[in-house]
Length: 475
Image (cartoon, rainbow, N blue to C red; front, side):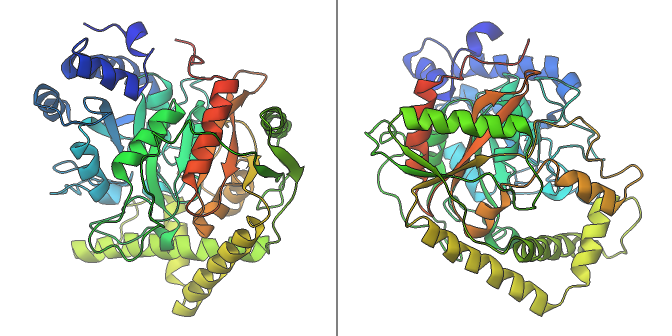
């Protein structure tokens, strides 16, 4: 049996290469992933559904010609996986068994990935930590007293803890980049509509939500984007087409970039010293690589922007909650959803159509403002989070919930990532710093719409200059 120490030495492309050469079998690699998950899930609580039998059958079958074929994989519990409940982390959807795959899951299967389960997420992906009442809190393998972030916290914890090199994730306000920061991973949020959202919806949260993966290496993130990007039949809109391969172009020479350093949060809250230190280190590293770095900030009405994005989110949550109970033919019960979700859904139900239309108008204007900003700057550099990973329970949405107290704590942790969801820009969090108590602290690089390749090429440069792959949690 493949032992864990050997298994964790490889990223997804490395494992797939060993499988293609016959040095390892896909079944051996899968069993190493399952063994690690079974031994560690009681402590981490990242895995909420198991599809081991199906995965074993897939691993034994013929694999397609793909650079990632045979690699174990997990799907976030916000996406449809045929035959497995899609709970959205909510008791209201606990029995929501589905009979087909999401389009992106179809593409993962076509690439030969071996899907062995689903990962923990907060209810409806609403929180920036992962502590749903349905499944309980997910914990950070760097320190289990702390959060792995959210909403893709289960994916982040599983990858950081060495169960697998890459896992599916989604991002509506930072939910790929936040776990990447908390768990010491690469977290790319692609351009709006770069990856498909179908077949059941055309977009998530008014186009603010998109999906990709959390990974340990930049090249894996590029390879997985190669496997999934491009429109699907019936998509309401699509990203600017990308020709060729992100992976193959990853190491092409990158011209010197003009990088704007932005320290200001979207909420006005001052960032933690560790997060500023992380940005300063990253800025110096970029300068050493030949890039031009200077302070600059886009001019956005941040209060109006915050209201607009909140309207869009709560409107969608109201639709998810009240649409579900209508389909079930009953009223909403006290124990169906968490108090925080109820507060959000009730807020959404009080909105008017005009409120929602105005919210969409505001975020589209923000997109135009940022497009103009990127006429001057190729990339923007910010902290990913306002502070290092908080303790489990800091953002509790269930026990003694108070909306005002929750919101005050929320902005002490989160405040940089939702702008790019609204503008549709690609953004990546990279693990370039650690706090004094050895917790990961990510930095965020943001590019113009459609320019994932620039971010991936810059990330590859930084990865080579300051390698992180061998830096793992204490085992």
